[in-house]
Image (cartoon, rainbow over all chains, first blue to last red; front, side):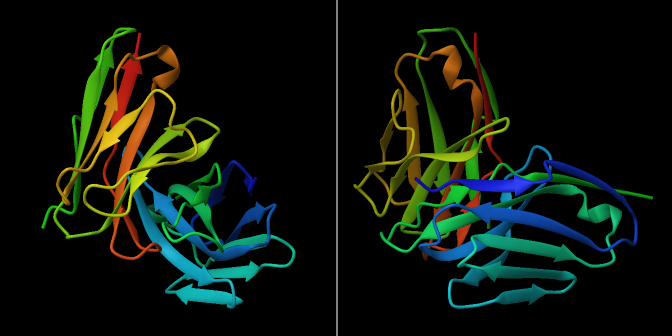
Length: 114
Length: 111
């Protein structure tokens, strides 16, 4: 059974710092990995999707990397801002099946302080 | 364009009561999903649907039933609520398996 772990569970950084969030998964037979953002009391919004054949994806100040063989992904946030404060979740899709049954991590709660 | 909406936003039930959560999407998506989110456990898939009239079990289906009579709606039913079903429930829809759009959630408390 796939298990997805995110460390740390919570992180507080001052505005302007660069930071890295970690995601690890136990079964490397994945089709892709996504990073989501969840604001308090809201649903999830997809940030980045990395296919299993890719090493990284970038969107603005966000960069996600994937090392499938070692079961790890990182989300790098450059020049953090208070508006980045949210919970970040990663999710993996297995390489079998068509309905995209994602397995989610427990998330990292990020707070960016002024 | 409302996206994915969930009704109700909050609900308190007593043990043994029944209720139905409604998810509606206006994006003509084929795939729809119901998840629950509990502290320290991430999102877990309850049931999903790959098209109108179809449903399938996810990771934690026990105690829940679903129906997809219309393409735009996905209903989640609790026949006899238990305190263990206290959670935040999220619905999602997708046109391709990788692009799930999530609703705002329903916070359910079972006393």
